[in-house]
Length: 288
Image (cartoon, rainbow, N blue to C red):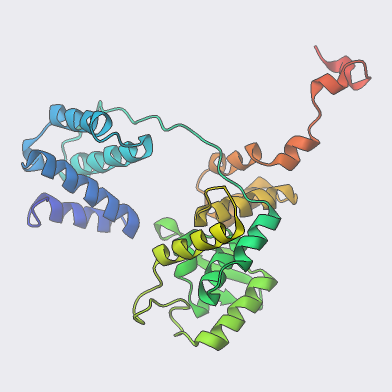
């Protein structure tokens, strides 16, 4: 691993100063550690040749996915540009092209069936919040009592990159939260504490509960907590909500990220007229 007194310690400090999220910092350090372990040398003693050879090793030998390779590239860029101040090492290393696939989306009936199949009221409430407000799984797990504003019917979300935002508070979710609160009596600072009473509930435990519910429903789709977020956004779009509002609710920096939901909205596709149907009509006269 990176020596704690040298490059690793400085990288940790740089990540903290840059206000990177805990998950991003963890992944960057993991990738940097793997790079150093591969050569068993300090990164300051390595250069562009070693970086390129290592990335090709990840592709050819470890056969990592493009998304994983992109994370390694990002981590090494941070290490050499920010921490070691040797940007020339990674200046010509290209960003991997990641194939863009359409997100999996559940129908409203499928979402209802999955949520009803979750046996634990705690996990059902967390996943209902994930769908009801379009939350990331960590955002749902980290909810606290002060985040619930029942007067304005909004939830305050501590989002990715420490960017707070507000999302709508579903009336149905509010009922679930109140029922859960009465039964579990969690602390004020953590609605969903861990099993040991400290910290927050594990997102892995929530994923397992969701997986069991999906199996119980007999769904063949690969359903993760993020699929509920995708479904939320698509269903909002199909209900007539504009993209800018959906962007704000999801916490997307770029509208282009939000716009991909237009590609999976079957309702929008069904409403669009094929030019084949316009042939021979008055509307078809405008076709060139």
